[in-house]
Length: 365
Image (cartoon, rainbow, N blue to C red; front, side, top):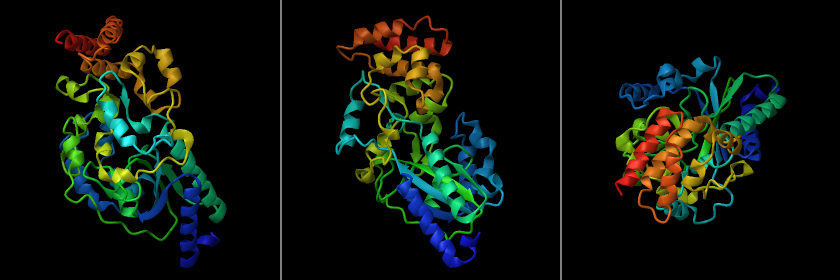
């Protein structure tokens, strides 16, 4: 490892790694140490409040999430990276267009990040290419790459490394890029120089807290996932609580509201890769059309999409809630009712339950 035998070589290597990261589509790459001990009390409190809901994997790993060296022995540094996902064709007025779509009851609203290719595959492949380049420079070294796929506190690592700060909605924010980006990490044994963290810049703004449809942001920097629409439509595998269904509106996969109103997202960067371009017209799809997909169509149309992971049953559950919330939407209402009735004999009890709820909403006017 000739490239890592002195301080000057390590600094040069760190700069080279960051340049390689940009070549691979990451907008910024930073480096931090692996000490997250200061996050442990907060993590324990969050879990004790059961804010993780049915995400048992959050509790299963416990404090290991705050101890990267326990996950990958030998870890002393974490290379963090962010990759923007705003589609290249989104246009200058993308935020107003997204907010307007939320006001169209018969439209299916899918979170921006999920309209293209599955980010897990894209980021892991790019991080692996980065690791391969490092190996070519220094020889064999210890590492492991992640993106939302291992028990690590991604936002805490990104914040400590200087990629941004944690916003009041708990997402990472950047002065240069807002929050529309994915995070990835490489845990490594290379003794690279670390970057400095940056201060927070949310100030007195509470726009994200105020806009949340289900009031899932229970306090600044504290999220009750059990109320979050992203959790309800993606992570939850059972019935959506009845009292929360009307608040979901037409959001059928994830929710972007807290990001749409964030002032920093006027600086959101367009994706460098076309992987995140919209597929299957998911930025303009209608609830009735998506509800008509059978399981084979669902799997075929969403191949390579993160949406496919929730399965057809939860997909129909989510759409049924959206269709129920479109009660009174004219001239679409008759077609919506007809589509719902077509699923009354669906083999899934959960789907039937949500269909009946939706039909009752229409019957009530």
